[in-house]
Image (cartoon, rainbow, N blue to C red; front, side, top):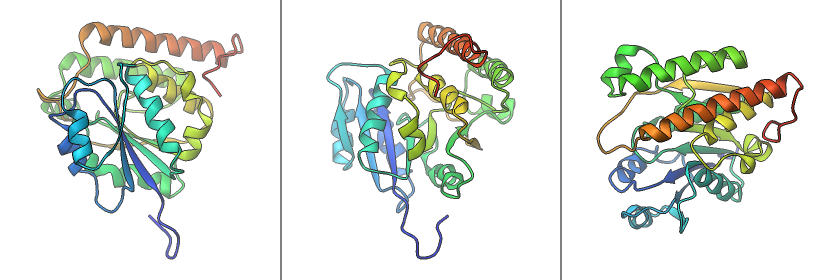
Length: 250
């Protein structure tokens, strides 16, 4: 991963957190020792002990006094991470749905110069996904949406809803993420904006972990998320066809 005699790359992990007291410790402990230089947690108005636990673990904590939303949380994550001049920033949800022990595998293609952005892909086989606890309706919606977005973008990704991602600093410095939504659709805006900008995006397989203590988007928010995601794809097509000039696309 690193040439002999070269300086160790600076890797920062950011965790957008909301009421993650039951899963934060496990997520943090799984991070590879010696790989990550610093962990930053942004708490989005939790009402539990997330902040107390994070500080006890020695994690750098930033607190939103009010809940800004999932996208608003990530904006603070990346803004604070960029101040540290990292080579790579890894985003992982602290709800333990994603195997943070695979951080090394996630960042390797970026360190080797093969990709600019990476994400963990949970969708390998239907049996594996359902055995891992993902609700069938979420699996099928995930698959349908992936097919639709792949056709529109001309890509071939297995999923688009992963909460385990890695970015080179160049991506975060160029993509106008501060213009994105403060809601869940932030991830899709980032993905499509990065694709439009010509950044190389890759994926690695990761296990599926759904369980009672992990956070989960509710039905109403889920429907809103899907509708907003479809709207982003429409905006992308209008931009691609030269009909509109959209500020979220570079």
